[in-house]
Length: 434
Image 1 (cartoon, one colour):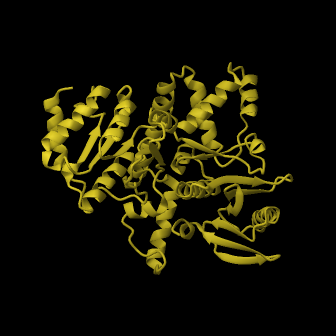
Image 2 (cartoon, one colour):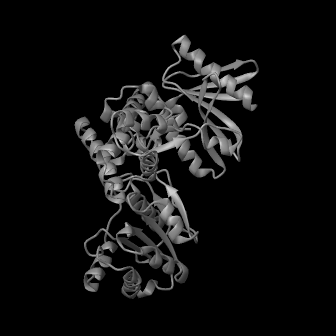
């Protein structure tokens, strides 16, 4: 690492403009804890840092108090962990007038430096500074951060854009509570696009539909070959790609690895059950999929229930010619609930299932106490569908002592009272914008 080039890097950053950075709904707080932002590749972690820098400057923080280090930049990429302190000292020497003021340190992709956490921990303990970290999901996972920073860090999960953020990125500025006919039609068209292509920022900002799919395919391949094959040195690339394809096509459904194992074994594949469990865990670690367990009053029993699979972004379904709109809607509802969960440390998310097979898509608990039951259905126009969704919801409400239930649909809106229980039916766009 050449210190003169480093100083030039630091000086160049002082002139960088963030005028084109679009704000996300998620805001990074200030505080004594190190703020670690985790999420899938290309989800917008770096731009979240830029948005925070923009926010700080709007609040009166001088640019000289801000230090942004991208360790994938060629100038910094060969730095040693012991040299991170040298870079900070170089910044302080360049801007000596600000040395008595709080320093805001933004670190992008530190995982390229061996034992980076030692340097970050030292800076956190010895300097009056706020530290914000992001990293690629392939190497900087929540488990590693929790271990390396030993309780000094608060982790924030960054998902693809919510629908509200999507509207901001697409320049839709109308008040959703006061829509005229033309604006309502525009909103509905934008929601259809969101359902089709998901919420990755680069995909959203791309106008060409074929290019949108190419970008999604690139993201999918990066997940398989960089986040999984490279990170874990997986040799059986055929199996991991098959499993990724399978879980994507099985999204919103229960997944039995035991059945998958028996199927693959009958077809002559050599593998162990442990390998399958490890591969699924890897897909979760890189934020490609999430799992939800069936609610059970016993935590021990709940841990052995069949998990349901959800994708990090519904846009991936378009790579498999997936036309099941109900599946897409349910996955979108799940991701929105995960965003809510990130703001409520006591909230947990499950599904509910009765012995007869009737099922409620989402059961929200707070401190293990059931507080809300939610169904996700594309349409209730079909009487059989309406009866199935409503009956399951009522059964869940009766069993768990809930007086209100919710059904999120694509278009319908109503309120019903059945046997003293209230069921609200809300269109997806309205629920997402609440």
